[in-house]
Amino acid sequence: MSGTPARSMALPAAVAVGVLVAWAGLASRLPEVLLPGPISVAHAVVDRWELLGRSALSTAGSAGLGLLIGSAVGLGLGVGFLWSRALELAVYPYALLLQTLPVVAVAPLLVVWLGYGAPVAVASAALVSFFPMLTAAHVGLLGVDPEQVELFRLYGASRLQELRWLRAPSALPAVFAGLRTAAGLSVIGAIVGEFVGSNGEPPSLGYLVLRSARSADTALTFAAVIAAACLAGVVYWAARTAEARLIGPWHPGQGGGRA
Image (tube, rainbow, N blue to C red; front, side):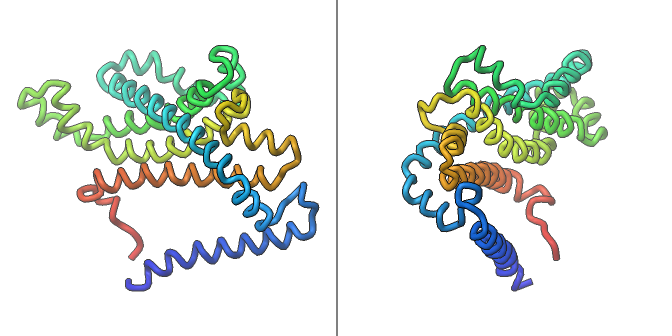
């Protein structure tokens, strides 16, 4: 349909305009310390652009490294579960328990073990991104046509060959779905780690949110929150773009949409 691209852009834009109008109307009736208006937040972004940029880069680095670590551990365990039922039975319950623990409760312990600074944010990001990747790898690697598995084994393929040529390609859609989830969670985990473990060197979005809120600089708090949301969106977009380029040409679910 020829009007679909324009409509897909117009509808989100209309919602954004509506939210901004409602926000401005509500802010005009409240003290700025409680709810700054969009213009005040825009001024804070312009005036503190350098600080926001450096903070966003620091948080992005922690989130990216945590996502890399969590993804590597999750994928490795997913392969381990495929090859060893005993390992799955022994470890999976504890992985599930780790996922149910709120990272806010674990972060103070990370400060005790790792000290203040970026390592706490990296560890928090790794913790929250680990389980989605483990689950995606586990489901994807097992979700292969049994007849194809039997065919590989009939021809004497090793477990590594079966993994490389059959299970890994078949698991890519599930793995990328898990990566998209883990990417957004990694930013949240990094910011939570910065709430409790950042000393302001280097500046980070989590630290900036807390410091500005404590000093009643609500406009800067909103600006930092918006920067964090934009960062999460960029990380998600990067994962989605990698998915489209790697498996979009052959996976039927990547190019589809509503008729």
